[in-house]
Amino acid sequence: MIPLVAASTVAFWVCAPIAVLCALGLLLARKPVHAAVSMAGVMISLAVLYAAQDAPFLFVIQIVVYTGAILMLFLFVVMLVGVDSTDSAVETLKGQRVTSLLVALGLGILLICAVGQFTMGRAPAGLAEANAQFGGNIQSIAALLFTKYVFLFEATAALLITAAVGAMLLAHGERLKKKQTQPEQIEERVRMYAEEGVAPTPLPNSGVFARSNSIATPALLPDGSIAEKSVSKTLTMRGAVVNVEELRAPTHAAYAVLEARDAEIEGDDE
Image (cartoon, rainbow, N blue to C red; front, side, top):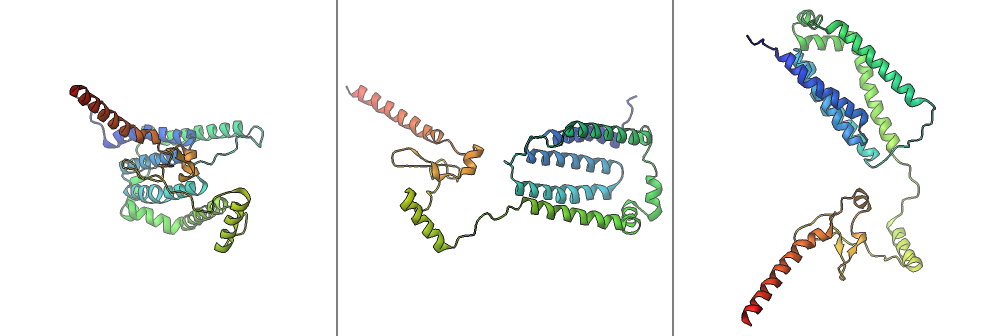
């Protein structure tokens, strides 16, 4: 007979590898956005494991609070810092990386041993008694949060708010020069035109074509060359600018077909 497998076991063997891979992606990802997506995978996998262990309150909280709110806070901080910003690779403290690796490895071994000692081959310890004490899982979690651990709960909330405010303060750049008024900006443009020949007119708009109409499409000058100032420097640095030659290719192909057809017709007439 085929042995029956519980749904919690299936959820563990499916979600646990996904959580481990996403956790490794969080540590090894070079871009902050990829790290945030990996963190979302870890949180969703943990939520499914909570649901498999008959903890619906923790399942909902993991999705709504952590995946929906705190992860959005992380993405907000990433947008403030910038996805193109790179940290310095110079090691200011000697042996910092080796020490951090050893501490992380030791902490991981400690957690694996501690959790494995009480969970290998056993049911969740004390879960049924805790749920029966207050009439259910949700009631038990609420009673612990707002009675025994209310101070830690409020302290954690204050710590998260402080972290968000600190991230915004660190990401906020100081004003390097005085903000110019409109008359001062006009005077600056006229001065730049007189001294350096910079045109005082606004920058050209992006290109508008039949096959493309976006800010990533450069405009074309009357001689057919590209107007470099028509596209933002940020898009140019990211390599997100539309290649104008790709836009010209269908037109050239259509003209080639028409010319070939005209040549065929003229040949028939002769």
